[in-house]
Length: 244
Image (cartoon, rainbow, N blue to C red; front, side):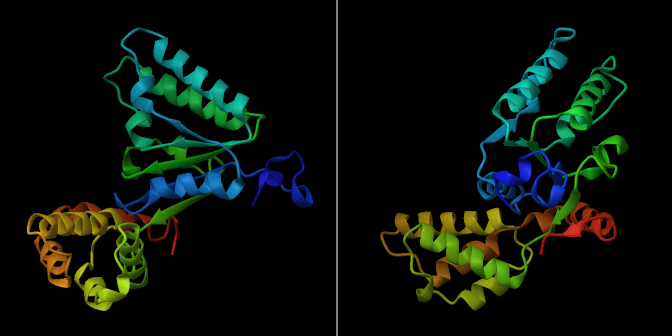
């Protein structure tokens, strides 16, 4: 996929891609996938921060959103990253209709935009999103990013060890992969970082024992919030496309 997909008519007269919603467990790479999408298309990446958009003054929030969307059209073709979209799109009755006006502004733009801006929205809690946002047609597809499989955990371990100039061949990756069952990618990375600090404080090189000790002392989100994670997986089973 390159910029040609954004051109009017596109290859074989295909409609330009509209976007995708990435739903999944925290720390499993949804944000990284958004950044990768821009690299694959070879276009700029713009991040829409809903926390910055909201204002206490009437009408300013909608105005800020329109300015942000206008910027995306000026930068087109581009990838527009809506990070943790549920935090900005959760519709309530205690804000004088602000969230509904923001939702309406965004949905109208998504339906009527003419410039090629590919949307990548990420969400951790699909239940907080209004039905209008997730209906077919808003996004090309909804993907579920689950906890990494054993093969993926092994690759994640290699990546983060090599990133810190550590030879992965010096470690028993099979044992580490088994020990990190239920870990997200970010939790695996943090376990490596913490183990390195421990080894550095004791004036020695990182060892297999350091990594295993840190992993065993870590309570991953899949354990701490097991009910929420399982509920999310259950919801996604027949409603989304698995990333793996």
